[in-house]
Each structure stands twice: as structure tokens, then as C-alpha cells.
Image (cartoon, rainbow, N blue to C red):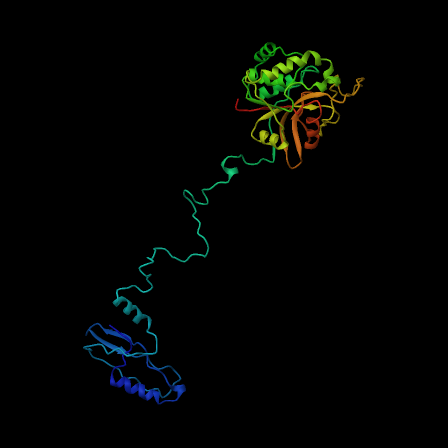
Length: 367
């Protein structure tokens, strides 16, 4: 085994002395380790020092040593660092692998080089990838545009727009049965004066999941002075107030609350629909060339002699929206061949007009 430099012999010491006497430019230190040459046939070892570099004339030759050495030469301190084979043999003699980690930090089978900073787990329970935001966990993804395929059914008279909207909703839910629908109208004693609370009772009677939101639980006495309510106000006030009072016992869900456009859009984005009471005088369709005459329902083009009112209650079915264009899609029972569209600002103006109580009847598909 090789330990240090073989500088213990007399011949090498003489060579070192001779080189020390040379000028500084020609002076060369002896090699720190010699290449080992094994003679496989005779089992003999020889230590052959490295040859002097080219361009250094006069460098004395280093004597070549041969023969079996009984003991290795004594270790002599040398200013040169040991070569890699010597370090490898020295580490092996101490029972350690070169480059091994200390016992306190056991080495791993993979490379331990990692980028600075906190480490993130890529999977598994409790990892960053496994965590979900509140929207991913429970809320539906946002929808920018939706238009539901709600069938269009035209009303037959000037007063049955609410019943026509109910037919649209029931057919959209595949719940429409004409005989059952007519029977429910007779049992609920619905007449030519249809209020939003009447449509809520109709949905409950037919087993449709619903929610009626309004600003007034009952009849606003101020409507008595409006031309739209004046004719049937005295006979309808007690009946409507009684329906509101019995709603809870009849399992008709009525809630006094304010509904925003975002609430309506979230409702429609889940595939549900809604029946809304609007002021037909203010509601303007962007797709229709001329507005319909709600007062007498004369064909378009014929002259109407009715005085234009300030308020005309009318039910429509909401079936979609477009956030990019700021539009609301709805089915108007006054038509039989189209889906109307208006701006959100115009829809809010017609929906929140005085006389509507901001009535909106939410219909759910999971009925």
C-alpha cells in the first residue's frame, strides 16, 4: 500500500539535493506519488517516478527502484497534496468511502442537491396540490354567458301572462300536463286577476320547488290609486293578504328580501329559471322592432286608442344572460316565436318600478 511520497531512500535524497542546487527556473520538486507498476508474472512491484517535463534540459534522472520492499518507506512530510489514488487508498484503509456523509447526516440514494427555499409536496393528503380554494370546494364555476332552452308559450288573453309563464316553466321541467294544470287552476280558484302569490301557490300545488321573494308581504295600499290595480283592488286585497298569511302553513315559501342581479345570474347559471313581475311600459326589447301593445293586444300596425298608462304589470320568464354585453334573455308571453333580450339596466328599471314590489319567483329544476 502506498503512503505519502517514497522519499526515504538515499538515492532520492541525493536527487533532491542536486535539484536544490539548480537555478529557480529549473528547479523541480519530486513527484508526490509514483505510478505503481505491477508485474503479474513475478508478482513484483516497482515505483516509477514521473518523467521530467519537456523543455527542461539538465534535469537529473531519478533512479529507478526495483525489488520487493520488506517495509514501506517511512512517511515524510511533503508540501504537495496527495494524489487522488492515495486519498482513495487512505480513506479505504480507515474504513470510509470517499465523499461519504458523516454519520449524523445519512446519505440518500438520490442526489441531495436542491434549490434553496421551502420545499412543496406534489401530492398526498395535506399537500399544496390537494388543497382547494373555497370556490373549488363548494361554489360552481363562474359562467359568463348562458341561454336556457325554455319553450315559448303565448298567452291567450290580456290577463293570463302569469299562467302562460307557468306553462313555460312546467314544460321546461317536463312537468306540464294540461289536464292537471287546468284542474289546479280550478282548485285554486284563479280568476282574471293573477298575483305573484297565486303563481307560488300554483307551483306548490303541482309539486315544483320554488321561492317567492318580494318587498311587501301583502298588498300595498298605495296601489289603490293606480289605474292598473284600481278595478280589482277592493275585492282582491283581502284575498291576497289571506294568501300571504297562510303561506307558511300551506308550505309556500315566501321571503321578504332584496334580490340583486348577481343573485339572478347565479340562479340561472345552475340551470334554474325564474318568473319576474315587470312594468311592461318600461321594458324594451333590443331585438323587437316595435313594442307589443299590452293594453289591448292588437296586432302590430293597428292603431290603439287606449291611453298609455304609467304602469302595466306583466310576467316574463328569465332564461339567460350575457355578462360581456350586459344583457338579460327572457321569454315574453306576448310573443310566440322569439326570445327577447334587453340590457341589465333596462331590466332593473322595469323590475324595480313602483307597482312590482320587486316580485320574483325562483323555480328550481330539482323539483
